[in-house]
Length: 422
Length: 99
Image (cartoon, rainbow over all chains, first blue to last red):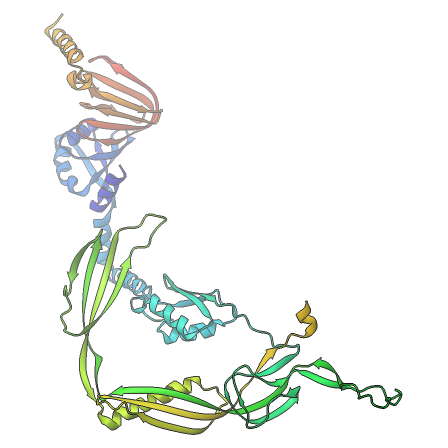
């Protein structure tokens, strides 16, 4: 019934008022000719209103003539009339269509970005990184790759344990789960200052505690530089009787009290780095050429709609984007649309030459060291050495040595005897 | 007994014997009444009279009369009629019977 109504709306229908003596005859005749009439209501004694499809109006004229009745069109409904009306108001139609297109077009952009779940990180910080990854208001949705953005956010912000990027209409929600960094509270109690690295002590500046090392000594990691335990000699009371003859003064007694050792211990520290480089290298580089193939996957069957089946390039990289319909409860629609990008690559052979290769190897070796260096380290010496294995090979190996002077002290909490007993 | 009656009797027995639905065999109308709001009549022969208070529909040999108020023919097809409105009564009329 509803379908029929819809059908008649699409085809268009008119409402007629029929005037005549033999209206029953008119209706019977129409029905027997296969003309579908509906909503027949009696208005007056000789008047009846009927609804009929546009296409059936013409045959009805013959029937009206045969039954000596006449009809007038009272109402026109349906798509054909609407289209006719719109034809008269072309600008309105154009405006309507333009509106729909604009709406559709604008809805395919991201306009709002929301950040949830962040605790310590500010929204702006996350949005800034998202913007670097290509997620900013106004960006087209088809260019977004949530997985990539998630990855970049995770990589850029180490305190983010997990990031989720969801596109909901024109909104993008970045969900963040922050890593709960257990921040060690600065130790308040007694502590030693121990060596963090092996090195040769250059200078010792004690602010609190008792120095255990002298300049020029070599220390290993973990050895105490400045002790938090201060030993104080307890002098025997002055009022004591003079010691009897022959009796040795008793061994000096110490009372230790504990402090937090403070100070600066600078030491020479050595670092070693290694880098190598081939004289000739093969390098892969994208040319920017790409071929895209679309395919629909349905229950394990892949149907390629457009694009090549195999990569058209000899050297290439494959980027696959799988789009599937959202799952509702446990019901998933087993249709997936896969877009495969074949990115062409050019394999070129780079010839560095001996000096070039050496330079690259040196850079690598230095880079390895500088990753290890603390911020306040002062480099005093830098030495590069080409390792000669004695064999002839097309590889340059470089060892780099760096000597720095830096503060090697690390605070290590000290268990006092009382605590140790607990 | 006329020939027509004989024919009808034979048809009835025939349909009983072979369990053929009678509305098909005997050319009877199938009437569905939905409360007092709607009547569907299948296998009709056309309307005889239609006013807001009274509808008569030719059916097989006789007629079906519907009374009520605000009656309206929802749709009419070759062999199906749907009447809507407040239905008061529905009766079967012999051919030629004045109602």
